[in-house]
Image (tube, rainbow, N blue to C red; front, side, top):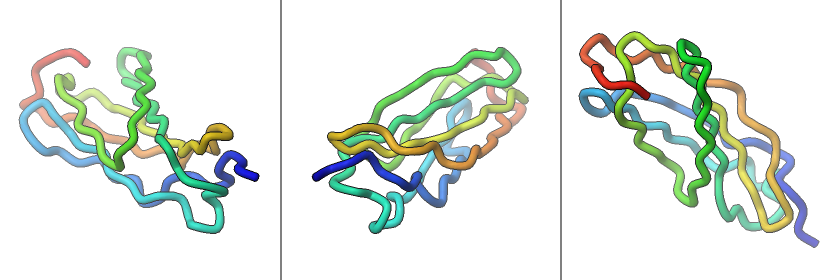
Length: 105
């Protein structure tokens, strides 16, 4: 029987990849906590400066976010999902956009 994951994605990292963009990468939950085949990830990205959250479902293990605002702080959390449902969110990761970012999130 497949159940939702009991573990969250590991080693979540956010880093700048280009002007106005950053990438979020992660590893799958521990195998013993996947509880079936991971079919997608839920990513929550919150701009703390604008109190705005985007929720994105993705099948891969990386995501590039573009058009970030300079000096804004973004909070990122991820959860893995099986066909039975979503597991717990990861510990939050914070990313501060560098000065040369110019566009709104």
